[in-house]
Image (cartoon, rainbow, N blue to C red):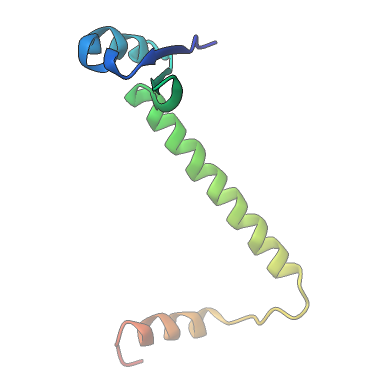
Length: 95
């Protein structure tokens, strides 16, 4: 489990290498300004994992919306050809 550290913003200037090493070891660092939490520093690896998590969560939410829409008896359904005709029309191609 990561060990979160809290450091004042001045430490970014004075002790950047130490703070960066903490973050690179998968330990987030909360940066404070005037005694209040301001930002969080994490490693690039953790940031990539966070981005993957957000993307996965977005996809799951969109799939849930699609499932709800598909279950609605008032949903209008289109054929494969109708969808592609609309795509090409919006791109300015003649169908």
